Every structure is written in structure tokens, then in C-alpha cells.
Amino acid sequence: MEPPRSEEVLVERAHGLAGRTVGELGRSLEVDVPATPRRAKGLVGQLVERALGASAGSADEPDFLEIGVELKTLPVGPEGRPKESTFVATIKLNEMAETDWEASTVWRKLRRVLWVPVEADPALPLPARRLGAAILWSPSAEQVAALRADWETIATYVLRGEADRITGHLGTYLQVRPKAAHGGVRTRAPDAAGGYQWTGPRGFYLRTRFTEQVLRAL
Image 1 (tube, helix red, strand yellow):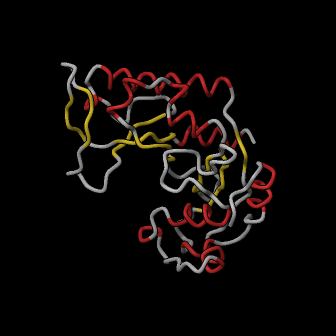
Image 2 (cartoon, rainbow, N blue to C red):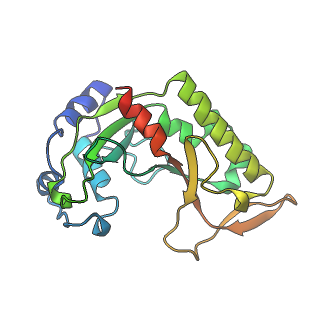
């Protein structure tokens, strides 16, 4: 699928996925979809990316580079509420000292987002879960202010050389969680003496209380 050249084209494509099952989408892309999500981490997002023509690949940029739109699949339960936090971006701890909010990956990715809800009822096998109606969204001024405050709080800990004090309890909407294949993976971060220390990789995630706001407002 060629990358969409406008938001209108992207939304039209996304609306064409509404009501389809993950299994149907997999078959159309010649991808086998296992019965359980545990064996398919990230697969639904990858299928939707391919179906819609996402172009960023693994780059730390919005998925649809040409139009500056990020794609987020959002697992929702039978009652329509988000089931888990949403990954936003890997934290580049050794670069945060030279980055402000406006230049941050978090802001680049959250300025414009296409949300695609996906059924996450544990009673349903993964191939039977349906895709919902996509939502093209930008944060309100109040949401931007809250996200920025969270980001700046976390950045302050990094700048002080206190990365290991950052826990999942920080942040009203933006949360930090470990982001590594296993506990032995290490990355560089500033230390209190102006040098560097080694610590575990982390990622920014949106709390479910934030994504629930997004769904309720639309």
C-alpha cells in the first residue's frame, strides 16, 4: 500500500477496516495470526500499519511521515474502555539534556494521532477480534499542558542524574516503564557528576485514564 498523501485518504482507508477481524486482515496481507495475543505481541499494529500504508518503519517519527500522523491501535474491553497503557516512544536518556518539549519525540508523535480501537475481550481468540471505527485526533490545549508537565518532570530527573528514581508512579498521563527485551539490557544516561551512568532502557506510555478521555470525547 502506498503511503497516504492526505489525512482524508488515510481516514478513508482506516474506515474501510472498521468491522473487519484481525484474522481477515491477516489473510488479506498473507500473514498468519495466532490464536493467542501472547504469541503475537505487536502484530495487530503491524498489520494495520501495512494495510494503511505507514512509511516510518522503525524510525522515531510519526508512522505516516508524509502527513505527520501517528498510528495507535488501542485494545478495548467489552465495555469499550482501554485495557492497557499505550506505548508512545523510547526514551533517549542521554539526549534529553539537549531536548525541550517542542522538539521531543513524544510531542512529534502525539500532535496528530489516528486511533484504531481493537477488541481485547479475553474470551475471543485473536483472529476473531474486530477493528473499530478509527478516530483522527489532536490533543486539546489542556491535554497538551498536562502532557508537557509530565514530560518536563521526568526530564528534570534525567538532567539531575536521577534516572533510577523514575518510576511508573510519576506523571498524571505520561508514564515511564521499562522497555527492553530482558533485564540485562543497558543504556547510557547522565549522572549527577556530569558524566554518564548505565541504566535500563525505558519508554514513554500513555496511561489508560488519558486514552479513556480520548474515547469519551469523540
